[in-house]
Every structure is written in structure tokens, then in C-alpha cells.
Image (cartoon, rainbow, N blue to C red):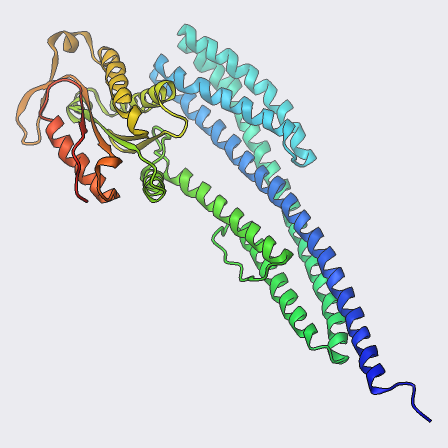
Length: 442
């Protein structure tokens, strides 16, 4: 009697069993991956945003505390110009809580801040009137305690949020582990039924889940440069790309914060160099304005470190103001350090920006000197050789390098050209700018 289970039918049946288990395993894995991807995006979009928000609010409160103390001690009304933007930034941050997809326990924070902002507004008015004794009393008895309460509440919120984040990460890890175990069982059955292709599925899912679990833990621990070894083009690969992109953005954000000048908050050397490399690589024509204060060392020695720092900050704000009014949307204002700044703009705007910077700066120079020094037109000081002599009033020099005039633009070529023009400008009187229109070799 001829057997019903022929070799062909057995192969066909075995193939159908393998396909059934494989399809079931793949289907379950895809559904789990989709849910994993969705929950990870929610985690990144909500939880990490909350950490940034808590950090920004805390830094804002500490900055306000520092400025209030300086106002009370130094009684310098010019510091109000620094305090008011901090208060506005705090209101913006709190307003963001209402529109951001944050956990519910964050919703109590705006109400807690309301009394604080009311009292700081009253304090600002007292500062503006110049009633320093009353201001000191209000700061000590009202705003400082309220601020301390807010800082304690932020600490509590951070603790709650860290716990919630740990729970979410734990649940995500459990979900991944569950998906892995179930898929592994189904795949092993396929292997027992002689489905070699199942081995590839097991290896892919196993490696991908482990890599994503490790990446999730590393990012949660603050290690943004984690590497995810997933080369597939499926959802795992897409999720790996999303993780890599997110890690890069977080790392760049952290680097930019560290790179920013602590006094002016303008981008520093790292950001400037990146922007230059980008424009050079993409062959985008640009004008590089190197801006330097003349006679600043003697000014700082004469009036002191604090006044010198105020001038540095004033110049940074001045550059932002001029570039905002007369520059382009892609222009960059950077602070190299000390009294050196950089503005990157388009070639056609370079000279006009230089003129406006000089005219605006020269109009504000009289505000920086005492009447007797302004009337004399110089200050007395000691040069590097210990010789007492007179120093002219502050002026500003701007060396403009056009990328189109460099055969092969580079950071080194631009730096050398700026140094050469700076040496020439330092020998001139008054504020000046110089454009090197020569065609230069690299």
C-alpha cells in the first residue's frame, strides 16, 4: 500500500510547518518591535525632555539668585538688564510645561512658580527705584526662601522623574526580553523542524534586542556616544539609526553648552570651527569678520576686572544686536575668548556689518569711561615693560577675510590672514576695518 506521506508531501508539510512557525515568529517580532519603537520614541520625546526642562529651570533660578546677590551687594542698577531676561526665560520655561507632553506630576510646578514670579517682579521694581535697603530685605525674607523652596521642589520632581524613568526603562527591558524569549522559542521549533533560515532570524533578533537594551541603558546613564551594532534594514536597523541620531544630537547639544562662553553665552571655538568647516566643505561663500578690542588690557587694569567683564559682555550683545538688524538668518556670532570675537556672514554683507559694528561701538564708548578720563581722551597705566604711559580710549578693529579670495579656504589660512590684518589695524588710530580683497594662495 502506497504511503500517503510521500517524501514530497513530507517535504511540503515540513516546509509549511516551518513557514507557519517562521511567519508567526516574524509577525510577533514585528508587532513587538513596533510597540518597542513607539514606546522608545515616547520615552525620548517626553522623559529626556523633562530632564532638560528641570535642568534649565534650576540653572535659571541659580542665575537669578546670583544676580540678586550681586545687585544687593554691588548696588549696580546695570545688572537689572541681566536679571530681567532671566525672569522672562523662567516664564517661558514654565509655559512650556503646559504645552509639552510631560508626566502629570509636572503640572503642579507652574502654580508653585506663580508666587515666586510675583515677588521677583515686585523686587525688580524696588531695584529699579534704587531702594537698595528695601530690596535687600525683600530678597532675604521673601524671594530667597521662595527660590529655595522651588529648588527643593525641583529636586523632588527630579527624584520622581528618575523613578518613573527607571520604571519605564525596566518595563521596556521586560517587554524586549519577553519578545526575545517568545520569538526564540518559536524559532527553535523551526530549527528542530529543519528550518535553517530560522537561525538567521534568531541571531538577528537576539543581537538587535541586546544592542537596543544596552543602548537604552547607556543613554539613560548619560553615555550619549554609545555604539549600536545593528546593520539590518528592518525596524531594528531603523530604531538603531534613530538611537544613533538621538545620541548624536544629545552629544552635540552637550558639547555646544560646554563650548559656549560662560560670560557672553556666545558660541565658542568648537562651534565656530564647525560652521567654518561646513561652509568650506559645502563651498558656501562667506565673509569672516575677526573683531578685536584695542587698548582693552589697559582699560581692564585701570577700571578693574568687573568693569572689564561688563565691557566684554556689552560687546557680545552689541554684535548680536547689529547682526540681527543688518545680517542674515544664517549669520553666526561667536566669542573666541577675551576681547576677540568672530562673525560669519555672506560676502556682500561683511563690509556693511563692519561699518555698523564700528559706529554702534564708538557711540557707546563714552558710557564706559569716567568724565575726567573721557575729557582727557586717554587713561594712565603701565605697559608690559612696567613703564607708565597714557593709553587711548577703547577702539575696535575688524579684519575681514573673504572665502572667495582664498584659493583653498581653510581654518589655518583664515587664521593667518586675520593675524596679518590685525597687526596692521593695531597700528592705526580710531576704530577701523580692513577687507583683504587680494587673491591669496592657501
